[in-house]
Structure formats: C-alpha cells, structure tokens
Amino acid sequence: TTVASTAGPDATAPIDEAPEDPQETATRLLERALRLGHDKDDDAEWLHSSAVKTHMRRMDPSFSEKALGYRSFSDFVKARESIAELEETGHGRLVRLRE
Image 1: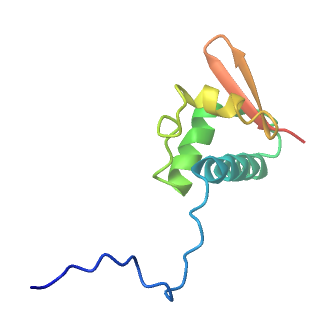
Image 2: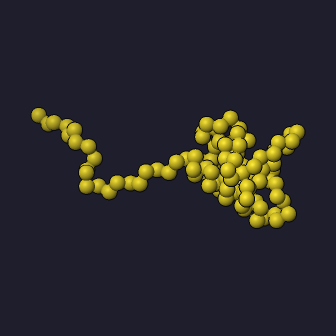
C-alpha cells in the first residue's frame, strides 16, 4: 500500500515575501495619479475625481474601490485624508494632493 505524504511544502524552499497590503498599494496608486495629474496641468490644484480614477485604472486595470470595501471612489479618497483632500460641491467632486 502507498501512503500519501502528509508533509508540508519543502522546508528548504525559499519563503516568498508576504504579499503587499492591497490598501497600501491602492493608496500609492492614488498618490501617483494625483502627482501625475498635477504635473500634467500645473494650473490645476484640484482635479476631477473621475479623471483621477480613470488615470488610476489606466495605471492598474485591476484597481477597484469596491473590491477594497468602499461604496464609492469618494469614500475611498476620504479614507486617505492624510494624502488627499476631497471637495464635493453639487454634482462635482474634486480631489487634490495634500502638501
């Protein structure tokens, strides 16, 4: 009779680094998108949040605020108030990088 091995993975195999926290990855992506948006248009202190989200999706097509647990992109930005500021006026939502 053959006995299936119950041993775990080879103990001498290199240990992969822990995967990065998706929240931290998304925060850095937001910061990069805001910096690039400001660099592209020096006059614009505030950027339309929809344009920032579009830029983030171009840089990382897997980005989804809903997958990170947020109801909306605005909620995602508000949760990162240490790096981004959100202004909601009427139907417009503007975001800028905090200095």
